[in-house]
Image (cartoon, rainbow, N blue to C red):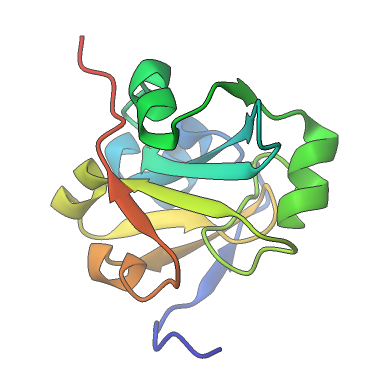
Length: 146
């Protein structure tokens, strides 16, 4: 399915696995990194991909309330099996299986945004509006506010 997102994948010699590493390689603010965190629904066993600003942490209590079930961080095998990507390279689209995709609304305040492009050394640039083109996306408020 074509999503009409015009972008280019950029590959680096160094790791872009973490938000800090990606921001340093790209030369942008950590907040502009769309970090992908995969959770596992405790009751449903569903794959839940939360995409948030690299500067933010996920409030797991808010996330549990949003999903209506308990959650656990997914292990590497679960992430690879359900998304098709290794941890550190999980892209917001192109998953191997069914994924519940949640994007924290804080990302809509940022432009551009950089997301993982399938490997721990590759990223691509997109806008907040590009996220709206991804089928099945849900915009939520799961950012932890301290």
